[in-house]
Length: 238
Length: 210
Figure 1 (tube, each protein chain N blue to C red):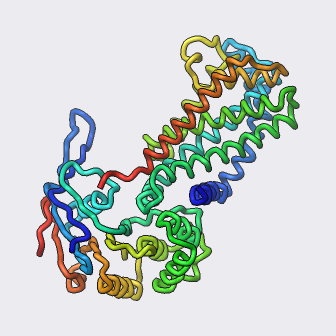
Figure 2 (cartoon, rainbow over the protein chains, first blue to last red):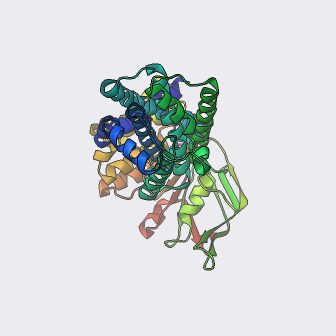
């Protein structure tokens, strides 16, 4: 267990030592929240929906955490696949490598969620801070699952990050308040998390059913991420 | 006593998209054996399948047919260094010592010994991104050796080495061979043939002992 924790810390350090990555982890969530109130409101109108400024700021924080966590999840799988496989083969095993990787991803998700939430708190204030933070974190965790899944099939950085960005855009612009909400919008993974976040932004609580739905979606995303990490690190039978 | 026995290994790859999709057979029943205290070479032309066979033996690639038997601990040095760019040399040794389940004293002793033997102690706290190709390759090799494996698989492990390091590499290999380690090394230099106990040549997907 200690070996997994230390290895997870190594994987986390690997990302935090990249100055550009670190700068993006701090700057992007803040920018998303700062511009989202006006931009998301305008987009919503253009798409036939409507989002209040407070809810738009809250959604911006969620999307910031989602996008960064998804991109980091992708790069965690795609950029270190061969080295992770070597480590698994050396005796750590694909399962322990996967647990170390997912621990690092969750900590990175917590970090970007905290930055996004902190900016939201400072810029817009929030009536239900605990609800908002959990919902932002859920956005990040769901996108860790999406990013790692993409990374397990696509290893090229350009193609992979574009795929994550494409899923993100479809998800964001079909979300609640942004469009009519029918069709594909009902199937998007962050649908219920967005409902919870919009409600928290507007100072309202969410029904238990929504929390159960986001809990199950998050659990599914984390299992997906664990599977993707394991799949990438697993040695082939010799 | 054999530490590695591979028999009838077959491997093919699909290339291209329909209707031009085709299958390339790389290995067509390759067999080889490495005994304890043996330094065995695997030679062949570019694209003959040496690295494919090595990856199959290690367990990084699935085979289509054949059997592989390995005995004892395995050490593997890939052709291209598989390392983490932002971690330091010391952190790599720590990461692999945990994978090999070495105790603190054993890990420290192995690390110091290999840093000294390959003469790159001063790079201990350097990140991989700041190392030259040759120093990366030294670390790549050292990580395969740190748990004193019974079977060592080396896929052109000296690319990027200067002449002195290249000679030291062969001294290290011969010393370990004399201590009982079985070593299989992918090589393509004729000058190295005298250093090897036996040589397999991979030709048309099969290994022939020369």
